[in-house]
Length: 166
Length: 210
Image (cartoon, rainbow over all chains, first blue to last red; front, side):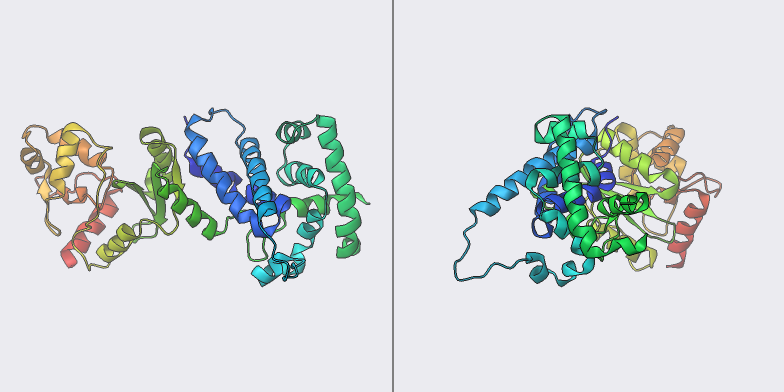
């Protein structure tokens, strides 16, 4: 029995948004999420009933994130404007609150590490599935996630003073 | 790095709110509205639905692009009803938190005794044959009046099909909007009702009082 698409939105929508945020940052995350779920809705009736829905959605989100990156790269940047270091801070002030520090640290990672951290640690996909999505071996995906986490420890944890909570 | 610090770090990665105002397990409603709007613009949706509060508990309202297709009481199990809609109409089903506004407003007015007729486009695809004829007749029974199962059978063209009228009412896909609660026993007994007899009595009293 094919489940209503709404189940996929309710069960996986928040985590996919979190992944979009982790891989793209706050400014582009909403667009990527909308594109992902619109594409998923189109394909939903043909998806096998025993499919791994979360992995499937993250795969679509991964492709949409690449599209969003390309579109952003093509966008002309006016020379007389100094780029805002944190776009979100101007768009929506609440996003510059301290809760944001983790996502800011993620944004500083190289793309592959950022993706592997997002898909494995945020979405909870096994390294093998992450590798299937981004290409390369399971070992490489595991390595990139570990390197990303090591870098996050240095930046986020140092800044946040989380040590005091222990 | 200690074990507990390690854990709290991964915990934060998986559950840190996207924005301070978000609850971690809920989507911003703006994103949902946007998905529904884009999907309907592309004519992708089979069914949209929302759940409204009423004096008879939470009511599921579901519509296709053709019109309202289903109304269900909480006792009918909304998850099961959505699965049934997915099976019978199509699996592209989405919650539309601010959709179905017209029927939601008219239902509210009906429960307040301000309107006698909930007048919205209906999609009757879930009913077939004689049952559909019966539903067509039920819509002719005026607010505040009742008919017996036998009268409905006669009016629907099969005077002896009294039991079939009972099943048509029991399987009415849009209770309240298609007023099967106005069908009672010949002797004045209430008969049955999809939403339970208390709900039927409530609706008949509401219409008498208005």
